[in-house]
Length: 228
Image (cartoon, rainbow, N blue to C red):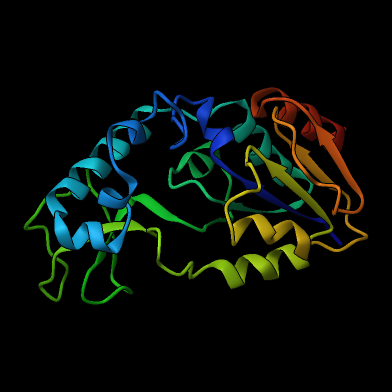
């Protein structure tokens, strides 16, 4: 039976494609108050500002290209069953060829009905504006899980992690919950790998190998070992 690898990725993997993290001093978030553009309250207060903010992020994503780490993870599919759980709202994993990608925090290239959350649409270009409506006539919002909202895919992420024969974490601080707690759901018997240049506190985690490198170098090197 094909072994199952589950990969959990964060902003660090996309940063090398030019997509700044929200903590980055030169990132888009620096010019905006998070409460104004990434909360339900901000949306109610000024939807035009929120739409403009995500239009900028969407444009940035569409101009970015997958990097060596994204392509290496797609290569794993040659010999393994691979599921990717990502905190990222970009589509770089899919564009690199990964088939099974679970987005925890939404997808910036899609919109969602404000009336019926099950109505989700692809955005044809990079702009979503006031007046763009769903099939039921309500304004479309970015398909993003904002601060203060529940993470609907979290339970599925837990189940995928539990089922992993190998669990890999790439480019995340393991500080943002509930996603940061995913690694605790991996089996003690499953080898775990953490790839990130920053020092992480993973003393609580059994059977883990820490690779202190950026995703663009650490991921291809690890994937090569699995494929050789």
